[in-house]
Length: 142
Image (cartoon, rainbow, N blue to C red):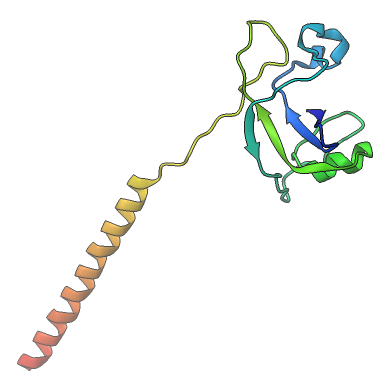
């Protein structure tokens, strides 16, 4: 996670990508450091919500389990942090750190489960109606 200052004074929190633990310190990966004016392309990310199972963030170790710009702003005493994050997307050379493009966009595909559920409910309804009709016909004969 890196903070980038914009020309208007606001700050955007950028997830620049994967870095192994042994290269966590920026000084150990000089090729990935940037200076001056840069252009960033990335995926817009809304702040992540925590739940009962989410570990607490540890700003002292720079370990973030839920990415929330407001938490990062408080932890580092920043001002004017925008209320979203960017996951950087860019071309990179092999071995270059941080390694971007780690965000995976996947959507659940439960269509088969939904189809089986609704067809099962329809068949059950037909069975219930058949039992009802059979009971009515039997009662009318008596």
